[in-house]
Amino acid sequence: MSDIAPFIHPDRVPPKIKPIKAMQHMRKLIADKEDTEQVFHIIQALNGNAVERNFRASLKRPDGRARYLERRSLPEFMDDHQGFGDLPRGSVGEAYIRFMKSEGLSAAGLVKESERFMQNYPVYEDDISWYGARQRDTHDLFHILTGYGRDAMGEASVLTFTYGQTPARGVMFIAVIAFLKMRKDYPASVKVKRVYDEARRHSKMAEIISDQDIPALMHENLDEARARMNIPPPTAYYEARETIANIPAHIRETLII
Image (cartoon, rainbow, N blue to C red; front, side):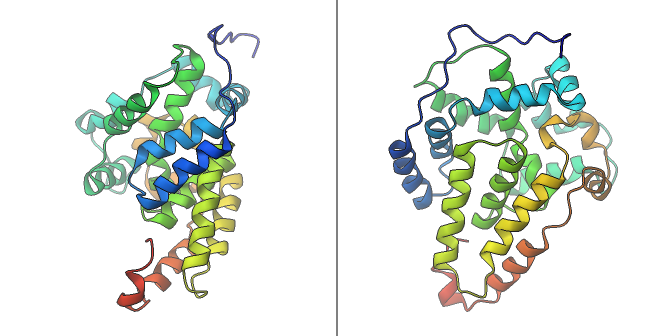
């Protein structure tokens, strides 16, 4: 790392840990899982210096160092689907475009939510900010590569997987609370803990997703990319989703799915 001298703003200080504030925003997120702004509040309240720790750890990995030296901004690229070029059938990029269109999502939309939230906090134009933005901007790729959907269990699983790759208390807090609520609310036939344990296990096995060369990754075959990165299919999650789908409709309507 001797050839790398990251710029960290001299005024930057880690946010204070505020567990009560985190719980207040968690209640709002439970009430509306689409209220993305609450995620940012929770992370800000609990993460402390996690982004800096993960940034410094990434600089020790060859792929992380390569991404830092490029310092590419991702949102414009991620939303310029034509700019991906010719994508092979079954590629990561093809799956990503289909996912984003079907869910009505965009990288710019997530940036907008983040910027609206950050109006209330100091913003430092430094390399830690660049790294934090990269974690945000690769979130939807986690869904593609891990196989988890955008249902409540899928989102909690993605966050659990994310924590295993880039540890941060705020991310894990959201995931654990979500899984505890599902374990309480779902019938015992839905093996919630098995889904959580699987996400933790897979995250430790896999290569770091945010370290990947994203433009090159888009052209890889999805199954081959998962194999290369050592990301197995989330079978416990698929089994749980199938169990939920077979629950009688009048009961299923009471669940957060």
